[in-house]
Image 1 (cartoon, chains in turn red, yellow):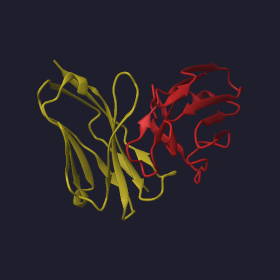
Image 2 (cartoon, chains in turn yellow, cyan):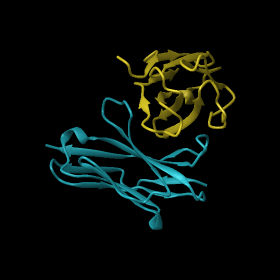
Image 3 (cartoon, rainbow over the protein chains, first blue to last red):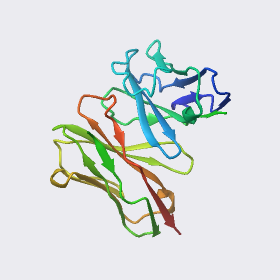
Image 4 (cartoon, rainbow over the protein chains, first blue to last red):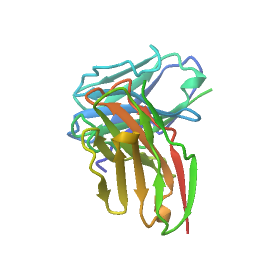
Length: 114
Length: 116
């Protein structure tokens, strides 16, 4: 289909390991967003990209988190030295342009840190 | 500081009833966006609506309608003639106008169960 895809769908890792989460936005969408949904914490906005640029990284929970986007398309969210509190569902969304007009969400990546 | 309150944790209605989900927000910004999202049992978030703070017109989309009252800082969502497929968790959110970063805040969500 032509929707937003995320991989892997599930990731189980050991505490201290690095993980990479991938998001493929809808083709032609210039804006891309990452969110996190934790049990008991609700929904949390992490970062957005306009093209390949992420102007504001202050929403990332710690310096162990980083994100990049290349070619105005695929984005990778990397978590270094994972901690148990990083366990959550990581959601990606894209929209045709920035300004949140009709964001389309992917199915999410469920991350479990043991 | 920004805050979104959804006081109703869970609501249950019988199919065909109307239901209103409350959202109250706090912000010091004079211009901002308000949003509603739906998360059905499948888990995939669905964007429903975005409103600008300078546009207080109510909006209707099929069985959905939104009532934005700046005077009471509320952005309530009404589903008319509810259906079982409306069962989901609904999130209200707030963002400053032109700033899509840290200050994007979600409410805790309201779980709506529509019973047949």
